[in-house]
Image (cartoon, rainbow, N blue to C red; front, side):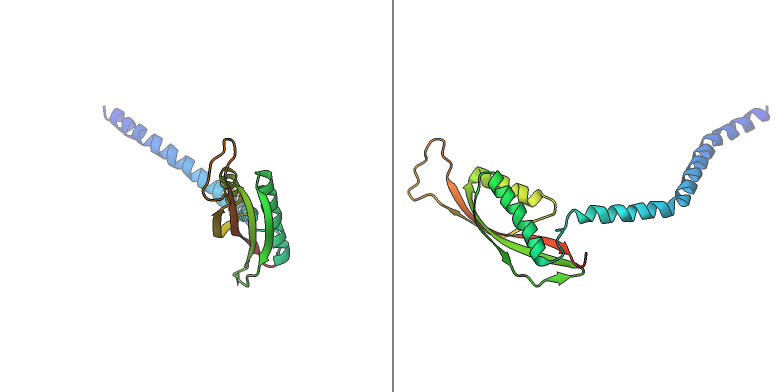
Length: 165
């Protein structure tokens, strides 16, 4: 009679002991592999963040990258590129350089929405600043079936490049 309750008490603790033993084994494996995990994590962080920055480490090369992305995006979505120019910015902080390009183009409102979406959601990251939108249609506007009104757009595209890559 005394042996049965003692056996039941021991059986009650078997499951938590097994769980904790398994957890201990997992932690031991993690500790053993910690150096390799840290190296892989560092490599992954560096690799992932590089995609968000412009590749050119010289302002002119980084600006050319922005210009190429803008031209491709605008023209492939039905916009008409008018001009692009590099905006001089002398802003360098903690290993990053800000690069800006002023862009002027015309497009329909539907195309404009797509162009802005693509520019802001692309890699490397580009930020839209100082945007001005003007209607190209004459007043009074008489809508014509199948023809969308045009909008003239001027904006600055800003990206960041790593210094000393």
